Length: 174
Image 1: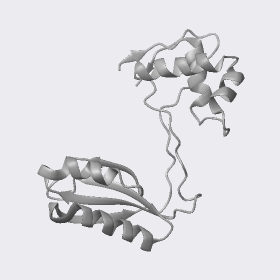
Image 2 (image 1 turned 120 degrees about the horizontal axis):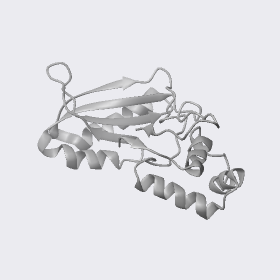
Image 3 (image 1 turned 60 degrees about the horizontal axis):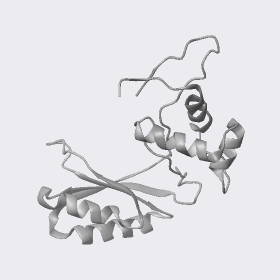
């Protein structure tokens, strides 16, 4: 997507929601009221922004450390390419895997092609999860490693700046 021009209401929706939705059972209703919109209009506009590729997704981003999950680890696996997609889908469906994806190897330094993020309240729990993944991968796995998080990084997407009210609407790049 090169340049996108946002109408003023869509811009206000993005500005009002880019730091997170209100902590409420009805976050879209709260946001709509704050913007002077009906909830149905807010949801329709968010759907259109998604269809246009401006908003990729609306999702919760938990702080695992604050929830007590202090042994967060990216497990990495060298999985036979002939089985990687199928096994990756299976690993990604495990309840303790928050995200799982395939990436190209960077030989000779980095032989791993399957990545699965796991979360535990202790390293023992995380190692148990890692052992479960290893058992699932079986002989298709040639090697693995684990990279433990030592701190949480702030997860944010693209940010809009509030506009100067006298400036013309300017396109934002994605």
